[in-house]
Structure formats: C-alpha cells, structure tokens
Image 1 (tube, helix red, strand yellow):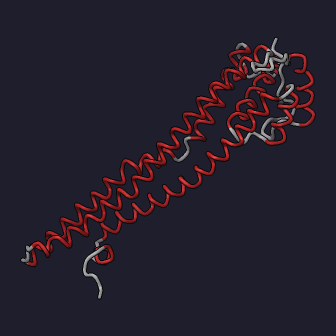
Image 2 (cartoon, helix red, strand yellow; image 1 turned 90 degrees about the horizontal axis):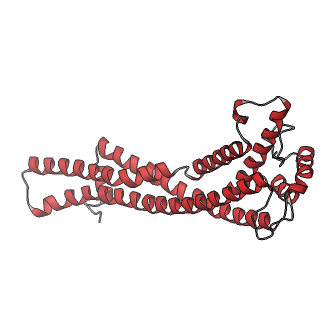
Image 3 (spheres, one colour; image 1 turned 60 degrees about the vertical axis):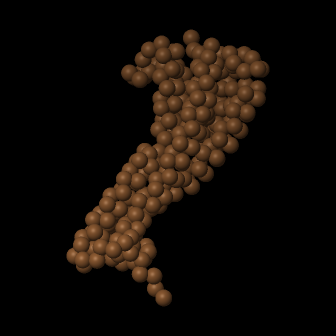
Length: 266
C-alpha cells in the first residue's frame, strides 16, 4: 500500500519553487562531496611529498643534490616550489649585472629574495585555499535555503488546508511534516561542508606555518650561503657548480634558458 505522505509524495506535489530549491541543494551537495574527496586526496599526497622533500633537503650534502631532486621530481608541493622561487630570484639578481634587469629585479639582493619568497607563499596559499569559498558558502547558506523551502511548503500546505475546510491535526501534520523535509535536507548538505571547511582550513594553517618557517631558513641560507640545519655546511663553495649544473640540465620548464638557480650574492 502506497504511503500518502513522505518525501516521494512531497516531491510529486512540489511546485517549481520547491523543485528549484531541491535542485540548488543537490548541486551544492555534489560540489561539496567532490571537493571533500579531491581535496582530501590532494592534502594527503601533498603532506607525503612535502615530508619527503624536507627530509631530503636537510639531509642533502650540498646544493647540487637539492637541485637534482627538484629537477627530477619537479615543484609539485609548496616547499620545493618555494625553494625554486628562491633559486630563480638569485639568478635574476645575477643577470641584472649584464644589463638585462627589469623593474621586478630592482632592489637589494635581500629584498629581491624576500619578494620572491613572498610571491611563492602567496601562490601556494591561493592553491591550498581552492574550493574553500564554495564550502564556506554552502555551509552558511544551505540551512537557509532549506528553511526557505520549508516556509514555502508550509505556506502552500496551509492554503490547501484552508481551501479544503478540514483543519484537523491529521490533515495539518502531514503537509507540514513534508515541508520540514526541506530543512533537514539543507542541514544534511551544510554539515559536511562546514566540517570539511574547518578541516581543510586547519590543514592549510599548519602547512602555511611550516612554509613560513622554511621560508626563513631559505632566506638565511640563500642570503648568507650558510645552510641553517643541523649539518651547518658551508654552501658558498658549491654555488658556482650549482649554477653550471642548473644551466646545463635545466631546473624547471617554466624558467627560460640562462635563468636557472644560482647562489652568488655579492
């Protein structure tokens, strides 16, 4: 025997506005779960790659090993991307002595390096925060969208009850209960979005905090030629060989020939 009440009955009797509200909530739910799955996988992979790169960086004997690793694995995570920008900034500073300087290369070596590292951090922050605006919007708006659907459904249910002249509890409870389904759907869409937003925001804060600390190490390392690690090896003696290695083999596809990393601050 078919149930005269319930979500199926409500859906079959819903008007255009109610169906539009349901469609918006469905789109929001699909987008939310897509971001949860894709960003979740991305965060796990990025943390693994970052940990592996940092371990290899601090265990490297010299800059040649670091340059080789970046050349082989690319800049697929924030820390290698930051170091790549630092190398490139040093090479840009070296090129300005040849009369090819531009406005972006102007300033003292420390200022040039600081700007490059800041740009790298800003780019990584933008990449990490991709999709979070959507999650925040869904988390804050979905309950109100569902509530709007409920109010609209109750309004039409009360109109139908008034026209029928049957105001008993059994006649009122069914339509009103069906309309409340919209609020439940709105909450079901909003709660995963809110949880995912907070989880990703916390992961991003931790990553950016580590990235800022690493940026300071890179700044000290490239500006003074001293690697601030437990090994405390002097890197200046290997700088010219690193430049030659990077120019010969190419550090990154997006850096033109002759614009590869070096470490010759003077």
